[in-house]
Image (cartoon, rainbow, N blue to C red; front, side, top):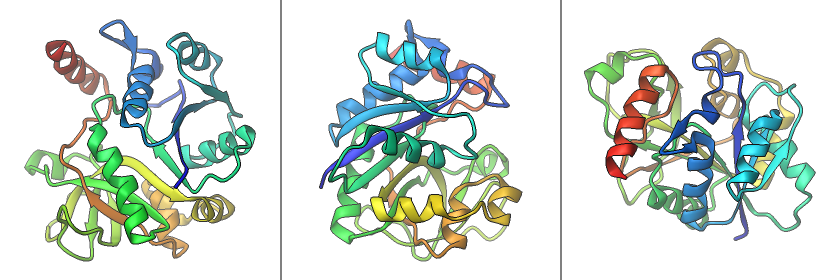
Length: 244
């Protein structure tokens, strides 16, 4: 199935403005992400952004970028504009990869695509088991609850997503910032208004659940850290510089 990976990115993140262009080992975070996506080799990779600085950085580092408007409420709305602008025919799956997860596992990206195809799903995402007490309480960590226990062999449906600390923790996992849409599901998603839950909890995936777009969840082998705060950036920088 023809797959396109689109990475939404913007400079105006509230908690860490300018984070896409913060450098680790001499390379911007956004360029680290698109290079990992290219290594996964699941399809063509493009960055969708409202900022010319990001376009310039991505192109300078050998990537493809599309300039979008600054009117989007979510990353998914942004990637849909990029898809329309690219005007690529016969795309079956569109993967929305967050631009602030430079450590995402290449095999997890491949696994999500494979699970989507095997199960004929309309929308899929990833979650990991690495939730400790600190992460349960951390409102920057998004949790997902699934219908069944999550394993490497299944692809259960998500019941809910939350940032809150959860008391009853059966089938609760750490949600990772990646989505894979069938083209028809993406078109349905962006045609729906933002739901009240999406706005209240600041989680775009709740728009899908509130409009009966089923989300399936694959188990990730590792839990990549998203760069939401300065502390996250310092932690990831140390890990990546140590590895290199």
